[in-house]
Image 1 (cartoon, one colour):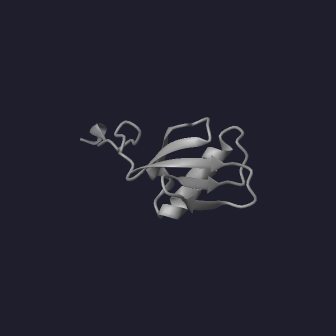
Image 2 (cartoon, one colour):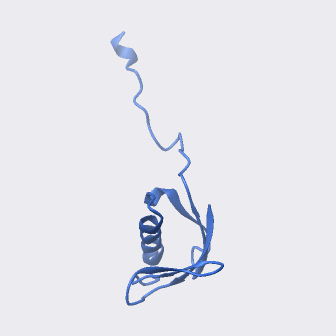
Image 3 (tube, one colour):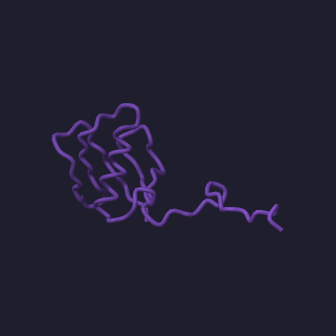
Amino acid sequence: MRHSIRVIPKAKQNKVVVEEDRLKVYLTAPAIEGRANEALIKILAAHFKVRKGDIRIVKGEKGRDKVVEIGAAETDTGSRSKPMPDAAKQ
């Protein structure tokens, strides 16, 4: 599910405000070196009760207006290594 988000960095407290057409997320983290994006993902995960890995920023990585996708993260078969059977033990 995709959501439009307006981020307000360096706020006094972290909070999520539901508006008509988007969410407004207040973050105490500054918009420096991706800290606000990390805080946004953490706060949205708590708000929607999902894992942080289930949230990704689709659009607006460097701006205050963002589109985030919230849902089950697709498994990337290349990133997880499965133990291979040991052929030498045969």
